[in-house]
Length: 283
Figure 1 (cartoon, rainbow, N blue to C red):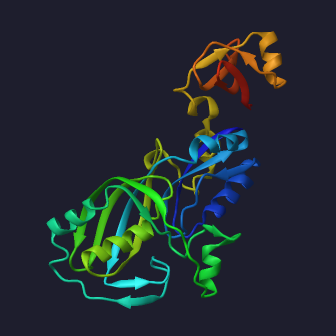
Figure 2: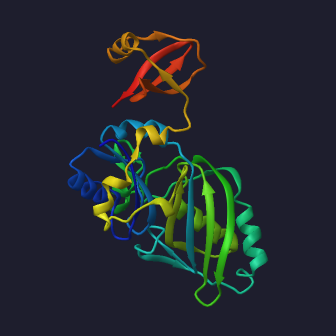
Figure 3: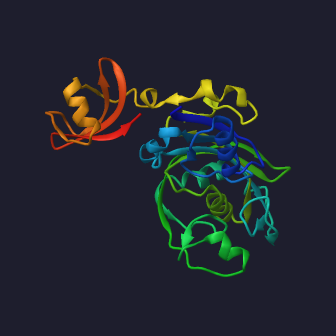
């Protein structure tokens, strides 16, 4: 069983919890292409069996989120789990729709972002949250990110909350974005809620919940289907034997990833570079 399983992760589950659950159920090798915080929900693509070899095609995918900022309080973790470290007034003027929209728009485009200390980024072989839990300060270099679009969904003056949707590049930390938005509004805040609605072309409406385990197998997206937009090459028996043995084949095709077939049977994938076809994934 090889391919991709789209999970709509529920709260309290870690990404590793989900991986282990599916691994146990399917009795296959399972991995993921990027963690979701335990408090976050939404799209978590899992790679199953030889589908784990697809990670190189998924790791740089853009993301889409719906996030809620709770204003007036800052926490040590940047989310609802951490202890409050600072409080600041939130005025009605800050929450005027026009003001909020203007502030959100300032984040569009290419910029740099400092990842939160409570994250899994490694510095000198240790994850940042390991340093943070011990109260150690570590210099974290800013990262290049891009916000493609950000739009206001709602404002709650009573709760002092803002909900927005954002499309962004890989490596964007929404907890940091929430804190930065709060600062530009003139106060402090933390990420109260987060839903990942899209990873690349994978949408939340196509994902299943971990409780729907009887549907795991029938919801696997095969490697062939995942690469449906890629061109194909049909190899004869002699060419196929060479291909499977790792022999590079001369072709006159543009550089690209190709689906490989033999008599209409899907074999796997190959890559063409400088008119040379090389084996990639064989199922």
